Amino acid sequence: MRAPAMAARRAAEDVDPYLPQNGNFGYWVSRYELDLQYKVAINRLSGTALITAVTLIELQEFSLDLSDALKASKILVNGKRVAHFAHRNGKLRITLAAKLATGAALSVVVHYNGAPRPVKTLWGDVGFEELTDGALVAGQPNGAASWFPCNDHPSAKAAFHIRISTESRYRVIANGKLVSRRARASQTVWTYEQPEPTSTYLMTVQIGGYEMTRLARTPVPIRAALPRRLRAKFDHDFARQPQMMTLFIELFGRYPLANGYTVVITADPLDIPLEAQGISIFGANHCDGTRASERLVAHELAHQWFGNSVTARQWRDIWLHEGFASYAEWLWSEQSGGPSADELAGQHHEQLRAQPQDLLLTDPGPRLMFDDRVYKRGALTLHALRRRLGDEKFFALLRDWTERYRHGTAVTGDFTGLAANYSEESLRPLWDAWLYNTEVP
Image (cartoon, rainbow, N blue to C red; front, side):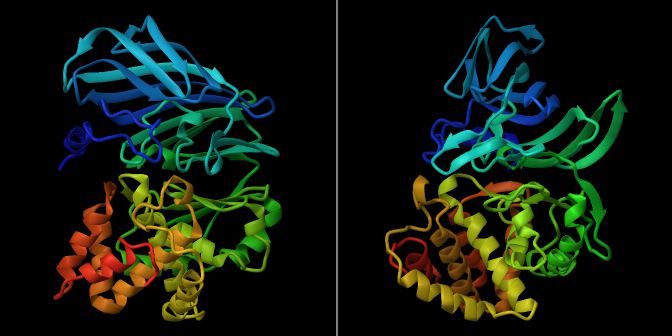
């Protein structure tokens, strides 16, 4: 089913119950074009967003997600200036002079500016964040609206064109291919094109005093942006990414992005690394010369298949991201001379059995969606499935999964349904035990 048809089918669905204030199902966006200017010293963002969409229902009013820290100054819809719009509580609500029919073209231009800041959520501050000398965007799960107006829902994937101007002493990293870099006076304009359909929360901008390096002998181009002072430690801590990439391509299928993979190491420490489309972001504390964070390096790379390319349609199915990426850590350990996946499964199974038995993997609730038990129980579910199917069928299933839902969205039922094709006997008892009961088997 093509993307507009899929979006139309879901137009009548409820907005995600974990983030009921996010998302807008009256239209489907195919492309965002962002033209931004950012002044690092004073944390000032101004920009224009051109949003190309189609209506999924007849509408005269619609909304975009946009942080209250940013102010819309002018809006045009299909070339005409909008007289009536309101912006509060993270929603930019637009009223048109006349109704648009279902299936009508929708071109929205929003001029906006402000001092961007993270969105405060149950899970802490997410989105646009100032660094000591630069900025980053950590968008999961609902931080995209902290820097551009959007339909901020994981199922709403689109292509992106990003042009951003900032002081020339900084490097700008964004998703996709760098198509131009043009200096003018004291400013440099960086232009990136991200053609693969991408969820808004996976879009990012990283601004800092970064130097670029490229890893040699990689099956997919791997680049890194990092402060010069961390280069020697990076060369040790991240040296085995080419082998990770080779392994994951073998086990998970072709790498899903045409432009390769970029790792950003910020000069500041970060609590946790995070994934974006084609990019992973680590803090200086993850690059300390000890290789202690290598499991996280594997985890974030695996997200390019699980989470970024194949994305959960609703946040309740986040185990499809985190369980799979956590299992990739165990697969890398097995490959690189560490404990086997079976040994790690045994350790984590024992630990989970000792913790409260109150988490439902397929619906953990918003407060627990990033609980470590989701990660580990998801990985254990996959290990139980691997033991049931055997390696040949299990990894064939994973490759089928990443190919069939490539750049799309899915739910748990899609995975269990596909897995049934790889088993001669019913998998229902396994799913009931691991996915649909709170007690750890």
